[in-house]
Amino acid sequence: MTHPLPGLLLDAARGRPPAPDGAVEVLPPLPGPVNAVLAFTAHHVVVAGVDPALVASRLPPGDLSAPMGPAFLSWLGARLGSRPGSQDVVLAAEGLGGRPPLELLPVADPAGHPRAAMALRYRTGVQAWTDPRRAGMLLLGAGLAGRRELAFEVEPAWRNRGLGRRLAAAARHLTPPGEPLFAQVAPGNAASLRAVLAAGFRPLGAEVLFHRTP
Image (cartoon, rainbow, N blue to C red; front, side, top):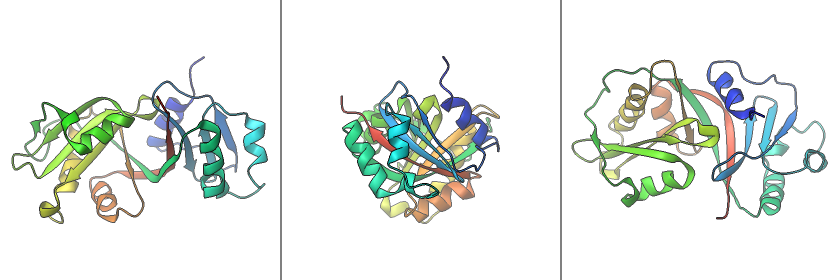
């Protein structure tokens, strides 16, 4: 049976999110390194090998914030044997193709860079680029449900100059036209959030990932 999460994410990226019906869906786990809890407007999705009835028993009826609350996430992490990761805003934009708005140089060994090492923990097929001054790094790879994801990092001395926005915009040009590109940003990381919004990304919801123990 085809897993429903890729289609759900694709629909959300194209402006068709799940209905705000207050439901909490429980979907089976996906291949790959993570389980997840996703939050859309008044609709949540738990992607993990847990009993739906047990999940329902841990959530107060009518409490739309409970699936992303500390109590439930801690309980789920204990069931999965994995600590919950950070809660991130999820955004998406369509690929544009064509020439990126800044010169990019491929990074031959992305695993040797701390930012890329983190990306490799959650994604497969990671590619990395840097600008000629090596002031920033852009990464693209396949993340949750195989979706195309970006990550970027700007060196401290080069921040507040618009480089983050240009890196996020460049990722859209490195993505085939019309194909969705996803970004995950911690809500408190205002600089990165401003950068991806300025590059044309739209908020879809939020998520917490649970990295599986090898």
